[in-house]
Amino acid sequence: MTDATLILGNKAYSSWSLRGWLMCKIAGLDFAEEIHDMGADDWKVRVALRSPSGKVPCLHIDGATVWESLAIGEHLAERNPAAFYPADPIARAHARAIASEMHAGFGELRKAMWMNVRRRFPGKRRNPAALADIARIENIWGETRQRFGAGGPYLFGAQFGLADAMYAPVVARFYTWAPDLSAASKSYADAVWQHRFMREWVASAEAEPWVVARYEDPDI
Ligand SMILES: N[C@@H](CCC(=O)N[C@@H](CS)C(=O)NCC(=O)O)C(=O)O
Image (cartoon, rainbow, N blue to C red; front, side, top):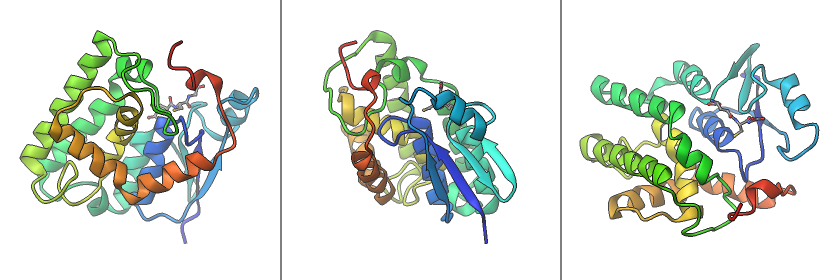
């Protein structure tokens, strides 16, 4: 039996934690959650004890310690490749490229419109750099769905895989900040938002006791 514990930040706010958590769910892993409140005075100290980078998520699994959301996904994909990536090598290469682009980029969007799955701040904090990131994301979603998504509502069709997990926190941001989106982007975002894993995550976030002021004020 696999021994797995995922170190997380607040489900309301921690977008990278959401990615790691979704990957554990995609893997069908039976895992424990260890949530650390990002608003606590000793957050940095406590997380440094559990994650080598001092960041979340971090997965402790069968003696291995895996930090960085994409590395968690790659490690779990080694155990169950079919759950994470499309079978076709061209589609798989595309999935890797768009997942990596998400992991490495879109800093302006992340900075301007943080994740808070409990709140709605429509129209706030738009700026040209964040909108340029959003345009590129819509382009990625549109191209991927057009080339590979015919079989279902997700990026590569019927299966909610690693690339969808990487973009799921962007979907959450779009629900909070409501930027203008194409009909195709909205339809993809709705499919992700309604996925049972997302519903489970949001329900847990709603039940969390913690409120971190810096993520609650859209006018800062
Ligand atoms: N590149 C990392 C990013 C992880 C990250 O920045 N996590 C945030 C929470 S969403 C964090 O732990 N921040 C802690 C801090 O900056 O003190 C990944 O893919 O996991």
